[in-house]
Every structure is written in C-alpha cells, then in structure tokens.
Image 1 (cartoon, one colour):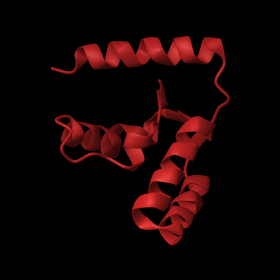
Image 2: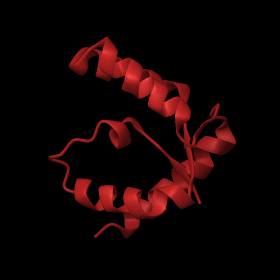
Image 3: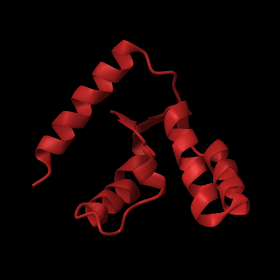
Length: 95
C-alpha cells in the first residue's frame, strides 16, 4: 500500500487522540509500506523544525530524511485522488 507521509508523522502532536495508534502502526507497518511525501510537506516540516528547534535540528532531520526509505513524489491529479481515497478509507476505519 502507498502511504502519504505528512508533517505530522515527523512532528507529532502528542495531544492528538490517535498519536499512540499511529506510532504503533509506524513501528510495525511502515517498513513494509511504500512511503511517499511531497515538496510542500518537506518544506512545511523543515520550516517548522527551523522555527521550533533551530537550524541544527532541521539539518539533522533533512539528513535523516535523505537516508530514509520515503520516496519524494511530484503530486499529479491522479496521485492526489488515489492517495486521498486511500486516506479517506483509512480514516473511516479509525474507531
């Protein structure tokens, strides 16, 4: 399955009611899934890291991202519709 990795995956909001469940999924399933992200998500994450933790933390995250198995994709209409429908189905399954 292709999974869109959003900013929240790298900068989680611990007050999120689904944070613990998402963390468990990531630990058990993420290594087996096709993880993708976009330039807008990368820019948002980098900007938030710069603002919250400074340039050293943002640079370290960037290096870790480049070494990770998350693919960078250029969103097309087809990609957005396909990932959006999968996201909607996944959210519908959350109790």
